[in-house]
Amino acid sequence: MSNTEKVERLRVLAEERHAAGRLDEAEQLCRRILELRRGDIWARYRIGVIYLQQGRAGEALEMLDPLVALAPA
Image (cartoon, rainbow, N blue to C red; front, side, top):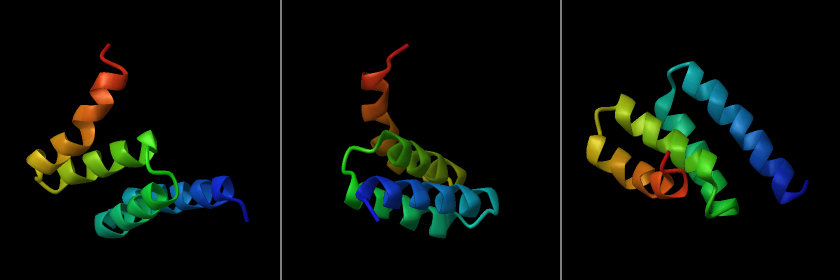
C-alpha cells in the first residue's frame, strides 16, 4: 500500500471516529497522518477542531494559526 493510500484510509477512519465522538482516537489517527505526511493541512485542521471541541483553545490555535497564513481569506 502506498503512502497516499495509507493517508486516505487514515482520513476515512479519523472522520468516522470524529463523527462518532471518539475524539481521542480521531486525534491519534490524524497524528499518524502527520507522521506520514508532515505538512498535511487536513490533519492539522482536524486536530485543531478536535482541540476546540475539547475546550483546548490554546492548543487549537497552535494547530490552526499556520493554516490561516496559507489561506488568509
